[in-house]
Image: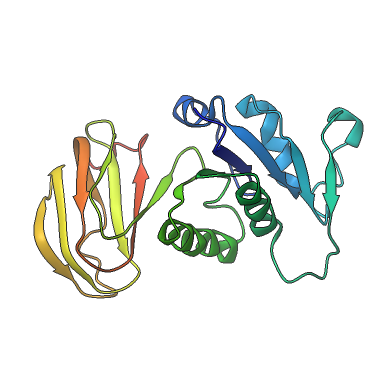
Length: 216
């Protein structure tokens, strides 16, 4: 892990799986408001804590000595998570793990994280979005291999029409496939081990469930 990898601790649901702990081990970290409550479980010591602190009022400041706080007003033009990402980028981040980005009570936030992850990837930033039980990765016009356990579930979510989509080492492989926008054709596939993806054009997200073997 290099000092250009940052974990952004978000306030969404998070399960500190061994796979997630391995993904963030040795990374720098920035907490976005209530995301600070995930720090200890992941073995991280954030270098900054940002937000309006409305979702972390129950977290005593004295429990986090030495972590500088960067407060923002509740009425602001960006989410706490976006502010945390911008702070990481200003510190030289080239790879981001958005921990707590998926699931939870706020589907608007989860969807926004998926969209912002794709936007960041288009800007050359490597991005992983995770809740521990689920992982999401932008899939743009390049080859990509995701190390998944044999029998685990994954899906490809097309955020636009996709052209030249190929999926290898999966129960339902595809080669140079055109996926219409809104199609469910690529939902609930099963990994045969590390899965290979390639895409000629379009924007997509790979959503994986590495601990879910219900399709095996």
